[in-house]
Structures are given as C-alpha cells and as structure tokens.
Image (cartoon, rainbow, N blue to C red):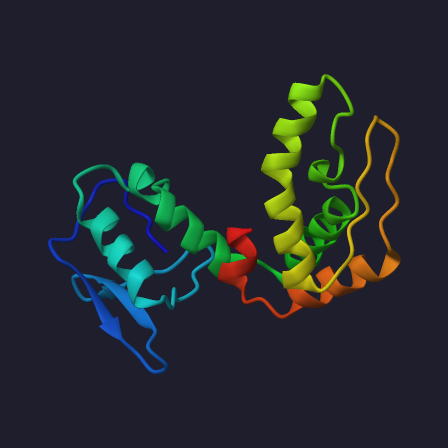
Length: 165
C-alpha cells in the first residue's frame, strides 16, 4: 500500500515469480494494491504497470492510470463482489440489446442485421447457446439454459478476465 502523496522511488522494475507471473518493485519495495495485496501480473500487464509507475506525477494520478486501476481492482475483488458482477453479467445476457432488431425503417433493420449477426453467431458458437431474436420493445425470453452456461463460463474466469468483462 502506498501512503505518501509524492513519487519517492527512483526505479521501477518487474521481477518474475513462478508460473510466469511478475511482481512490481518501486526501488526495493513491492507494489501493493489499495487493499495491501501483492499484485501478480502477466508479463504484458507488468510492462504496462512499469510504464505507468515510471512516469512522473503524483501517486494519486498514477494509481488512477488505466492499467494500474484495472490491476488493483482485479487483485482486490472479493468473493462477494465476484458473485455480484457475475450475477449482473448473467442478467445482462438474458436481455442483450443485440437480440432486438428494428423492423423498420428498412435501412436501420439492415444495418442492425449486418452489425449484430456476426456477434450473435459468435456468441451462439462460443457458448453453445441459442439466442432468440426479435423486433419491437417487448422482452424476448431467452432459453433458461443460456443463463446456466454463461454463469458456468464466468465462474471459471480468473479475477483479471472477469474484471476485463
């Protein structure tokens, strides 16, 4: 956890641990998340964090940099927060707007069909589900099995991949 407001380190480096994961060091101090957890990162993310923490600036600004904020969030997510995020994503999956295609005007219908069809095809193949497509504003019921499949998929994700969604 960082307490000082001003940048106090001279060097930022990544150090490889086991399983191709890296820790970040500010001089000889291991960078920790807001909750005080070690941040174990892939090499790509570690490189981005080194870049962000090597920049000049105040600690608050650095901590709000994109990759740092993402990594801190993924590292600090609790089981309860994971469950809440997964639940919201499953709910969203049962009423995704791409399942609603305008019937008119014809130009909008064709545009939505062209844009949404590849996404719908991908989702059906990736998750092995069937999505019901319709027009209008009324709710389109999706097969119950879809929610179970999506929930199972989300449960298997690590915190970084779930946070990215």
